[in-house]
Image (tube, rainbow, N blue to C red; front, side):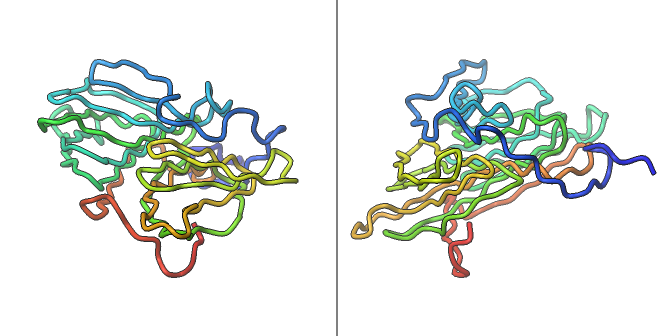
Length: 260
């Protein structure tokens, strides 16, 4: 039997091996420390990327599409995009016909996931900038990037844990957000604050947790849980996944308990 390669149908669940060291770059990157790429449509502020974290497998940042911006039809790596502000249209071609595009209205709280090499185009149709959190997988197979928004009430958080098949980011939209992160050998931990509009990096095979660090405060921590799962290896055919969260983009943490 000839084994399947990644992206060629079903493959066994094989977690990627730990890196040595597990990480070597920054764990928290504030927005003002991000790498700003000027683009024809506006800006891309890359916060978690190879230059800042040393992890070449994924990028997390903010895209700002200026009013009236219209990108050229493009092919990219697999990416998840969560709209925070503004409105627009995503145009997607799922086959080779230039006249069979699908249009998705964009508004706050909408998340779209595009598989690699899916031809698409972004349009800002509003009078204000359209701002989105973006997670990109640079792996040469269909790894799965996705987001979901959550809220930690004052003093609340999840339990310390680690993953062997993914990297994650803790993008704080607003409020007091902090992380516990272990050292690369998982022998000691420390607490770090993630400022609003900044991102915390959670490498694979490293223990971590997220929480609201003001137990006596009155402001929740609203955040986007961003991840790239490297063992989701499916079809290379163009695909589009759409999720609409509440219009303010916020979804409270569910009651089953802090298992984020």
